[in-house]
Length: 270
Ligand code: ADP
Ligand code: MG
Image (cartoon, rainbow, N blue to C red; front, side, top):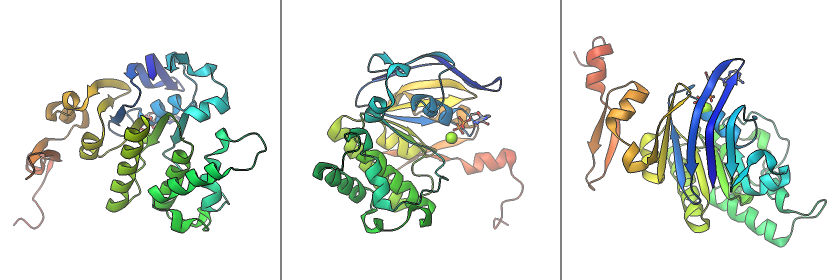
């Protein structure tokens, strides 16, 4: 579905991505992990065509992405950016309905089908109750959910999500990932999700890509990439697997090892 070949990007001579080659198959759910500043958002902006590809080539469904017309690209790809500081003076429902624009005839009114999809998308992100509120007056987490509803209402083939769970409480984090996961299963949606939550990524994603200092350190199926030594090297913290009762495991920071090398006296520990 998506193919990157030796992709590079620099901001004023400073490389943010270097020599990235990656293939993402249709219906795969990729998680992209990496420390702050490793190039994750830049990668997503290139895929969303927010930034031009400076080096190498990106293809979508066999065609260089620059060859698609905007409306056509918007029918295929929807993008939830990391920053949503834009102040829209629209109601929540108006905004989610905008997700349908790429599918509507020019100057056409929304059809019953459009409204149905908008309603479903809003229900799945739990914003139906907010539909008459102004977007500008919502909290960060509520905005995040509204923008995701708009992205889902767009019914893309590829969904690009830049830390969609960042401002959310635990319940809504899970609800969002669960919604994306269901869509991915039901519609063979291809998803690329940037996140800092290693365990949620390992749970929901089929594949992981790991970036560090603008470079791709590892990419492949979760079971190949989700390894303590690799993650330790990438994030530069000691980690350990914490087994859970159901036989699964979660990666957690090994605080005693961390404090043994970085810490002073532990608070509350004598
Ligand atoms: P991540 O999403 O992994 O935190 P980014 O892709 O946002 O990383 O940033 C990668 C690098 O590019 C960082 O060093 C960041 O400071 C730099 N960068 C990002 N956006 C800009 C910009 N608009 N102008 C200049 N440098 C930028
Ligand atoms: Mg980012």
